[in-house]
Length: 151
Length: 84
Image (cartoon, rainbow over all chains, first blue to last red; front, side, top):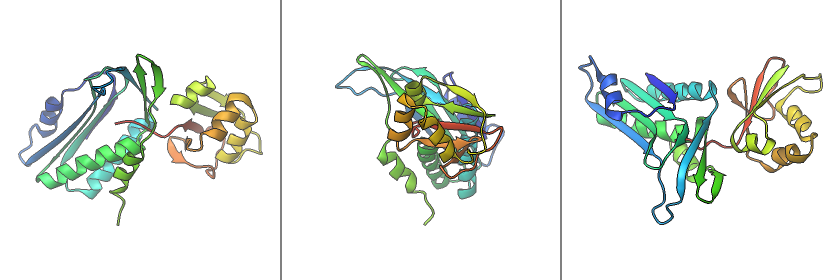
């Protein structure tokens, strides 16, 4: 399991190879990368500033990862989240899940992103040509996460 | 003594990242601590009464108003999270 909160960029394919190295039992790799996105019509975003709670953030990512391991038959996973100032087009977050079969890896990756967005202590501030503002949490993210509540 | 941490928009509104406070016997829970902070008035009163969705953790575990607090605890207040 690889969990990291870091300023540096990451290489998704390199992380996937690292997870799979020396293994012969992996049939599926699912990888999600989140990027800093500007809205084309506005072209107003200069950067995102990502803040976190050192210690608690890493622990909450570990808890989310352990939850995914309990729920799905997956072999290994990586979560890398960047902090600091990130420009449009740059990577923010990476989730990689490896498993024997694709379904488990797809579902676990989706779950990890939904939980990460609503549970892990990170905060985004938008720095635009017009000034700075904190990003508000989204109801749709909460609803996405609730899909995984046990029925 | 307890450590209190503030993050993101709350940190900016209060112009404070972290502080240490001596707890008296009246302060047993997160709710008691909030009441004490609100009594500071000004931006404190505003931040802790207007931001209804303010979250709290005690020793880096999510908590709520009823969570007990005691000496040596690390308490953090922050707005809803927006990572990913």
